[in-house]
Length: 355
Ligand code: FES
Ligand SMILES: [Fe+2]
Image 1 (cartoon, rainbow, N blue to C red):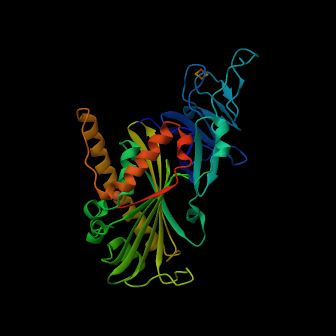
Image 2: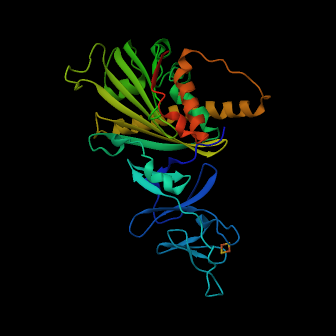
């Protein structure tokens, strides 16, 4: 499958970009990032127009990059403003610049036709900057195509098998899910509500709940990049109040940004925001370490799958079951996005599939 262009992707956390040149490849395009003196993030193609030297291996001078090979100098819009040995700068001397928006702790970059960027809203993950929440986060490089991470996140039944002892318990795999697809907005919802489940260590240690829990997992995937898992945990039988408030539950917002690096590698951004024990450093340390371990369990499995796929003969047929409904919907929407065929997205209406 090819990439979905004309989309916003998370390129980095805001805290990763400063006054040092920062290289990251997004959708196969090598980019260089830096923060201007005014603090705005700049993204340019990471290849000098002269002899292709990576601008990320060069140096910043004020808001310009001076190429480390022969000194072509670029402004923040990517225009070359000086070349060595002659006064005239060739008219075509410029590198591509990319629209960038900082939002919810992420640096989003637009990959595609520039004039479409303004018309395409960026999905939100407001908890990551909400003072009522405490957040831990990271990014793990994945040596696997991004579709494998989408599959992985859309079907959490794998928690029982791959993440036992951390976030998996038997009830996750045993409890059916419901899937809804908002075709107009291109959002996929997968819910699994466990009324009476064992409390995995991830939640037992962080919340202090002893005994069984009511555990809800509500996934909201905004293809291609942003994946949200609204996780609600409470002592068994404790439900939200009639007015919708939910003071006796613990809420964890698990956020992933799935950004293809190349056809066969992915930037796996993960963040965990909680609305309890927000000032407790020990809980933060525990959740950071636990979640990173869980992410690395997925990374190991998906890197393995990538090698399996690359080695197999063409034409292998997978077998899908009910748990795959959300993942299959995601594949369909991603395929449509990759084809650039937004027109067919309109007017189909909402479909629901029990799974
Ligand atoms: S390669 Fe950049 S100035 Fe020559
Ligand atoms: Fe997982």
